[in-house]
Amino acid sequence: MTLIAAFAVALLISTLMVPVLMRYAGVLGLMDLPTEARKVHVKAIPRSGGIAIALGVLVAAVGWVDISGPVLGLIMALCVIVVFGIIDDRQSLSYYWKFLGQILATLILLSSGVLIERMPFIGIDSVPYWVSWPLTAVFVIGVTNAVNLSDGLDGLAAGNSLLSLVLIAILSVQIGELPLAVLAVAGIGGLFGFLRYNTHPATVFMGDTGSQFLGFLTVSLAILCTQSATAPFSPLLPVLVVGLPILDTLMVMTIRTLEGRFIFSPDRNHIHHQLLSLNFRHYEVVAILYLLCTVLAMLAYFLRFSSDALILVTYGLYCLVVVGALRTLRSRHWVFRPQSESAPGRERRNLWLRRIDWYHFKAASILEILASVFFVAASLFLKSHGGEGIGFAVFVVLGLIALCVLLRQSPALATRVVVYTASAFVIFSYASNLEGRPVFNLLTDTYLVITFGLLMLGVRMTKKEVFRFDTHDYLVMLLTIVVPLVLQPMLDRDDLTRLALRFALLVYVCEFLLGRQRRAYWLLRAASLVSILILGINFSSGQFS
Image 1 (tube, rainbow, N blue to C red):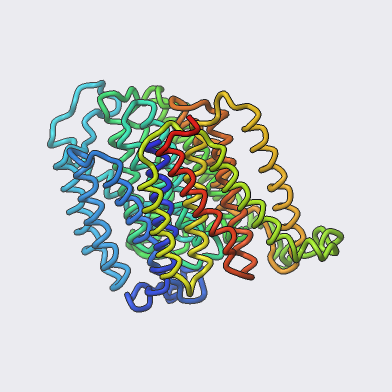
Image 2: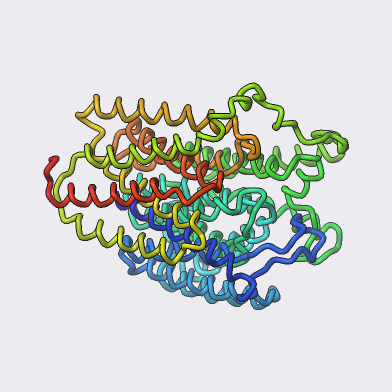
């Protein structure tokens, strides 16, 4: 439940803060201008999303992690990274100043005890400080910059970091390192909130603040997880966890060195640039790289107890296959599609469905009613185990009402925050109601399946909006599959899959309704707030126990 709470808080903060920071990005000087040839966007875009991610993670850490020892050092180091990242996004610092910030953060991290003490191939004995300190510093700074340099397409660095954090969360839970799992899950929540706006075509970038923050967080957690006294993992495992940005950076620097150029000079030799040159579309390149990162994460998971030699050989073969495939395709001038080929005619799909005009116009109202009934009915019939929940529920509801008043000029954002919060409350309550109530759960799933069917019908029949399975949906699907692995010790895997699917469905219904942009959906807002109050009353009185 701690992991669920950390995820929900980071998700809500990130989802709320991204549009606010986008609005004031010009005033803050955080705009990304397409002034370099290597950039793929054609207009100025806010690069303030990294601040929202960092806020979500840090607030969740303060609320649900015992901040002491290495965790305290990591939090302090991340704050330094954020400060230098914001300055960099405003003024485009030189590499000397970037490295200064990274070195300061790394020194704080090392002094708190985050060290690579178990070296590959030399057994379980700890190496001396004069070896572990420089080795850890080089690895941390190297990966931080690798993630920063790989942030070249919409959702790319964010999605790959999310996949790495999912693996870290799984490994941390397995070895009983809950603080590390909470930080990883908070990072996942913050990234999901950001990716809502960063999936192609992106309306906001994370900037150097976000990419350096994610790189530093991921590599630090990977070290803490694999170097823990309770971890039976190979010390080489972090290489697989963050292997794709490492490969990308080493490949680019090798090309620059062979061409006699400075290793930090900008160019279009990154893996994503090479895939774009093969005429893959923007979102297709991101999906391919997500797949490559997923393969590495799966290899890391299944080889977590393997020898150092096997992990090193596996990573070497992986790099040879990826680089070899790219080199072969480019040398043969292979292209995925001709330049003249137009975009697929998705508007011609299911024209016979779109002739049913009445459902096209009524779909939003029907789905709003179904979602509202679900929130209220579910909260009425969910069992409680007692506790003091009414005060917290009233506080949350009053806070959400105040937020709606403050965001009256942005009704879509206010509705999204209210519905996401209610969804988290309801799904959290379902976690204690899965066993022993088969009829209740069957009715719930039947109701949601019907809602899902009507949602898909509404999407297919919509005449202006175009639906496609994008990279954000891929990450949602992947998280739905792997979250049960993270929380398996606490709940049954099938039950957790059911909870994740229910939450994903409620989110997609909300996004579909807000995409229609016809009204503020007051019924859905009211039902969401009422459901939170009912759940608070139930938990306080224990009347359904």
